[in-house]
Image (cartoon, rainbow, N blue to C red; front, side, top):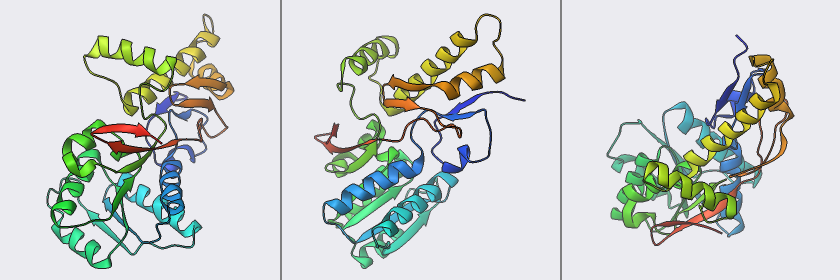
Length: 254
């Protein structure tokens, strides 16, 4: 039907179906996981475990983590899976702790990852926690509590205080919604602003799916909240993201 679609989904396959009409408004999942694995390996860690939910999102992120480890000649000591609505992770964490990893990589939702972090610390796990998009959020911090301290994550949008653009966005967002924005709001805003740019290029006489998609593909050099976008033929627009750490209950860029 030639309807342009802008998604915040991270699965790499979304933009690999040959569609001219699909665009991602953030980095693809492999970029998140490669970035955090590369960083942790650079810090000297070599023993990793993975815990992932059984959804396409969780399994995809875990696959990307394994691929990133393999690029360093490493292999996860253990990879455990859980159902998305699970609340007790004792069995998985027992197996993980028996493998004695230095780093536990999360591949699941904010809430589940937060519960896992809290339970792992309660069971005596003393290693590092790290992950991609889900753990770099206020919701993860809220659920994990003290267990979130020191967690490393990858994200294209870590702080509202990065520059004048992010500060202005955060001020207007909080005035409108009564709470500060985080990465989900930032990527939705970037996607909307680029869509508006494409609509304006097609207006007033040519506002249709084909024109909008064509104009989206022309976007290059657009400075968004998450960084600079330059769309390729597959609908991927941003390739670089940052590493952050949770300190005193706040997301901090490194």
